[in-house]
Amino acid sequence: MRKEDKNTIIEQIATTVKEYGHFYLVDLTAMNAEKTSKLRRACFKADIKLMVVKNTMLQKALETLEEDFSPLYDSLKGATAVMFSNVANAPAKLIKDTAKDGIPGLKAAYAEESFYIGAQQLDALVSIKSKNEVIADVIALLQSPAKNVISALQSGGNTIHGVLQTLSER
Image (cartoon, rainbow, N blue to C red; front, top):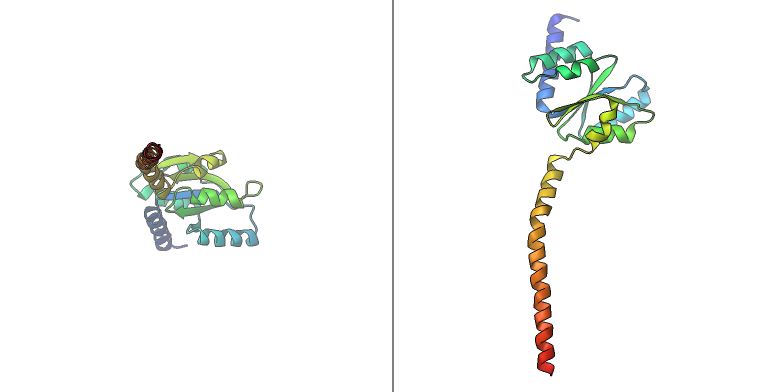
């Protein structure tokens, strides 16, 4: 491969890393063509971009970026595919749903500006809440006191009404 072609691929990988906020390094070595095709379809449905890369090109692309991705470099061994997503836990959920006997295997991940190294981190990655989930939790917490006040006022109104009605009947 010519040096110009390599530089183009490295730039393309770097641009994709910048475009997406989170990415996962996955080992697809033991997957056959049929399973890989199913995984690609599942990624497409979940709005996850799956890209098979050469380890050296991925490392060079990461080195061109401003952030320090050096904790991921030890994971760049063997065949590597990268799952890019704007939702931090989407690839982790997909891997957990489709993985059988550890295939596809998680090598490492960069999610929510943190590094997760090793397959044992999969459960931690699945439990990360997305931005929309956090916003929903905050809204629910903010609505809770207002609902309590309204419910207290309504029940108080019914109680006072009941007392007045009883007194008027006597």
